[in-house]
Length: 267
Image 1 (cartoon, one colour):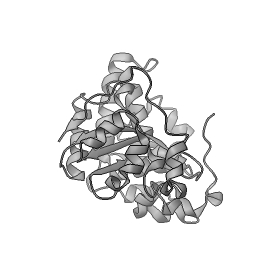
Image 2 (spheres, helix red, strand yellow; image 1 turned 180 degrees about the vertical axis):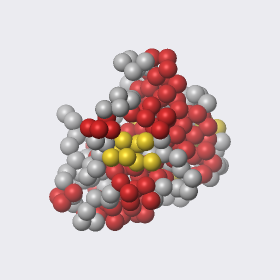
Image 3 (cartoon, rainbow, N blue to C red; image 1 turned 90 degrees about the vertical axis):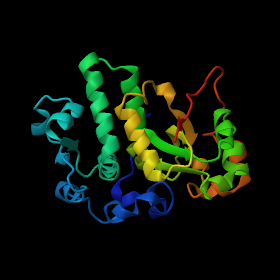
Image 4 (tube, rainbow, N blue to C red; image 1 turned 135 degrees about the horizontal axis):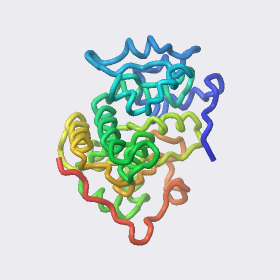
């Protein structure tokens, strides 16, 4: 069933105090204020020198017949529905991660050149999954990767719970659909993750993701993405601070027989 976000007026304010929305405090007024930001306000917040700009998605705009990705690549125009949670959060991703968005757009265009606009490749599906639900995970403790590989969620999120607050494991939320789904406090969120291992800083991890995607080395197949049940992380749900949650959480699925994950990117 297609997810329908709550109206602006009906959102529970508590969702903005928990992750992932708590991690976007620079846009708190746009999320929690009485009105939607305008296209002009979104454009005014762009990083210096950013070519791409937000444009209102109107019937007149769509009459140009261009594919969404081509419009960005050729004109720098990001079609954006006004007063729409999904597109607002997509704008957030463009404002915080423009290089990552740009790398995805370039690879989407490369695939469109091969596939045309009617068919989609495995790489395109992978990029779309990451664009919507992607997280970038950095592990400094390799033992955590073994727990993740085996879907030992109890071990990863309860026995090793401190890893997510002491720096041994960290993540950056990129997928804008994750932010939209977080508006509903009952949602159990699962991210689609790229994994990095080593002692790199957050900026170095992000740069490695941009380089890997831009070089066509990452996101070549949806199976390259690792599921990560984000609701088990500290601060994401009220009940995740109890052991019982990690014993019975519906989002904790076993690994399918024969399922294997690619090696993480070494930093």
